[in-house]
Image (cartoon, rainbow, N blue to C red; front, side, top):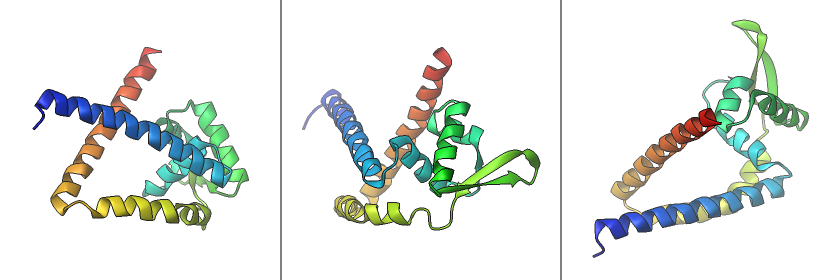
Amino acid sequence: MPDRSALLESVIAESRQHYAAWTLFNQAMADRLGLHPTDLQCLGLLDLQPEPLGTGEIAKLTGLTPGSATRLVDRLEKAGMVVRAADPDDRRRALVALAPGSLAGVEQAWEGPGRAFGEVLERYTDDELTVIGDYLRRVSAVGREQAALLARER
């Protein structure tokens, strides 16, 4: 059995490979849907939110500047993917939500890849899935923290 140092090195190398593969996949999916990869990621993030978001919150989630986030929302609104509504608590602010039915094309495009990813996950026990989920939550949190630190250093 490899020692801990070799195991950590292997996990780090596989994580880098995973990131590269996911980046290529995201680009290919965005191309298929006629979207920019950041636009596709924004749609996915909006889908995970329980409430509509302001463009400032979208900027934070996507790592974009507020101006770039506004242009992203403009593109998605023009494409019929999102809708803007006045914030009931602050009429100067617009809230952004997914337009009804806007993810139908994304969901259709995800059918094949979703099955393929699901087949991989089916090979794991519940305990292993718990560890995988925990790992993904933790490295996502670290990634967000490190991105924020790097952005502040600019």
